[in-house]
Image (cartoon, rainbow, N blue to C red; front, side, top):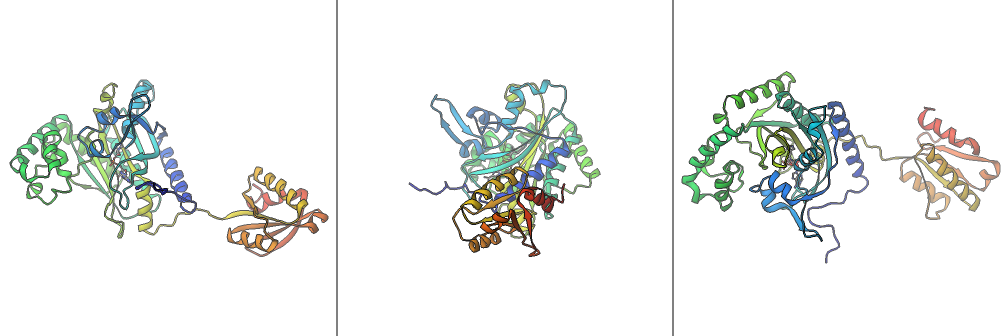
Length: 426
Ligand code: HAM
């Protein structure tokens, strides 16, 4: 039995966890400005939710779910994505009946997919996503796209490409579906086994096949944009106009097909164009969905959202050499020697911390010199020194590590003194 973490998972250690915290805080702040509020749903759900929500014919449901029977004999699945759970919660809590609509949520948390791990593809990954439920206004589609793009831009990414498409409404999709079947049917035997099934279950997904990508019939496949009815065409036009008024650049790709079944109308992905980003260039994806709320037992309501993984975001930041302003230093290191001084150091360390100051001390019984070395290694701004001599004089030696300046401060005013030093008295 291996005692390493399972394939496709990772430990996030200090040094890196600060980057996660920074990014998570920035994303939460962005959501606050767009007025999206946080929702937290369970990490596991009834398997049926994803079968029906994400779609039975998708790769996620067919091949990638972590599904198990719990001790009560229920089929449970670790969530492979967030949208189905958010919609389930929206319906279960009858949020659609509340006065303030649309409902705008964001979420952040681990998702699980049994995929073949590679750079940017994990079996456990953290998604940040948003969902806006209860409005068919194309302006909210544009808002979601704007938030998605700004989540990268504000962190400093520049090499971004927004790709949009419309998958149309039910009527348009049916017309397109029939055209796809007519187009691919003569080539059925030449397509991979998965695509032969897709052709019957969800022919749109054939366009997204990695194995059949080079098949000549792919190039000539009918485009959804030719099959959009007037309502769908107009909807897409409006979304694009709103993007234009916000000066958001985009590319329309009629072959953009998302890997989940619930989409119609707007579908989009954001790619990284940074050199050295890796084989997988998609940073995030999303779109509008109409049937999902009804699928889980709610009223006819549509929503739009997107999700990204923090793992790919951090990869993109690295590829573009963006340094995150994470502070990894330490405010104060407490150096003490002697039993009495150690006891006083424990007391004062505790008081300083309660006063809001970041403090650490030695716990390895090190000599004075070694304690100083530790303070230096930790990048401490100040070192407080308390030995027998200082104790006797009722003072503490405060050393500013940047300037090298030292001063003696009375023991009973050290808290106030350090507060002033570190915050300028604020
Ligand atoms: P998705 O395209 O399956 O959509 O995933 C969205 C994002 O999650 C991807 O673009 C990628 O950043 C990240 N992601 C997916 N799988 C992995 C993986 N194995 N390893 C690392 N990152 C991964 C959805 O999940 C939809 N729920 C998005 C959405 C929200 N649509 C509407 N609302």
